[in-house]
Image (cartoon, rainbow, N blue to C red; front, side, top):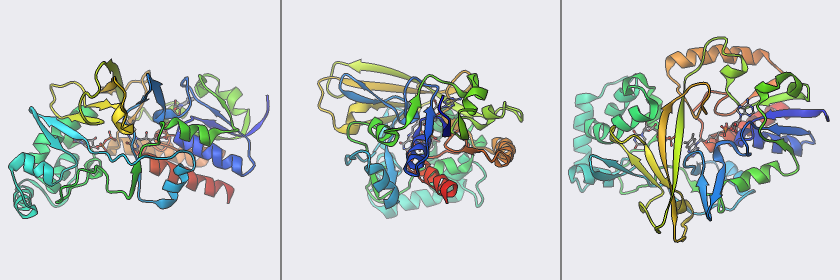
Length: 367
Ligand code: FAD
Ligand code: UDP
């Protein structure tokens, strides 16, 4: 077996960007993945002509022109703008929280009218130093929006009370006093035409890859294949859970082909109510403005993570952060291993942040 400069564990966006850049520097890489395909969570499966986002809806967005140009090297992006709607107690509301949402909730027609209601509720229910997601939401947007569109969705999504979750999670969502349903504030946004696999294929062209290989099933042999390792799996698993297991949230996806052109009129529909077992339904064709005679939908169920399941979200509350810090300290001493990505850094990264983080690790490595 050839000896590589880098063994890259995980072919998601982090591992693939790292491999691509290392190759440009003249280094050899072997990228392995335990799944049966490359691409990690951005992988798309073409089912009957529709690109199905196999691991949940992925919309690329960034404010950084450098990152936008970087991904545009590998695929052309369309002009899709994410504008989810949320069903709550039988009524539909626009997201993120904006003048349309406020009109749907209260009938307010001007920013002043909406602001009066929100300011009153924030004064009554909010606080100066919000310490958890519930306090943060009440302090930003008040009780009605929190109870109609946040509380039940959040508790279903995370399997925890909103009071037990970190406040930063809800700050991901914009609040606007304009009639603008764009879920993101970023300057650049879109979906790669033809799906995300084009990006992975572009990144990994000319690089050795192997799928269906779990690093932990053959750790010693695989480690000996390279001078250095880039690890993008779970950091606690890497260290054999010696400080205990970090908490993650898992997901289950139920896909269905429907013999109709248009099921829900939107790519993403959220379901706030706790008695509906899934958090959202994705209708994939709308990401690429598909005109097929059929459609494919995915119900997304949020599930408790156990060691046999895929970990999708880190749960970054204080307890887990403390455990993560211990693993991080170990990882700093392991100078022959680069830890990167959502699972190895235990961070709620979006794709643009992953690209930026991989590029900065590359810069450090090759400077
Ligand atoms: P991953 O894509 O998870 O890749 C890690 C890879 O490592 C996996 O393929 C895994 O199989 C492999 N691996 C792990 N352990 C081992 C092992 N022991 N041996 C071999 N291989 C291993 N971001 C956005 O910007 N916009 C969005 O709209 C968006 N939507 C999302 C929706 C959902 C439901 C989820 C879960 C994430 C979403 N994201 C979104 C975030 C985005 O998926 C991540 O930022 C990005 O894909 C993470 O890349 P990564 O390389 O760190 O991890
Ligand atoms: N959220 C919510 N209601 C919604 C959508 C999101 O309360 O209809 C909250 C929820 O806590 C979620 C967080 O906002 O986890 C971040 O939402 P985002 O859409 O960014 O989540 P992701 O796409 O990463 O699952």
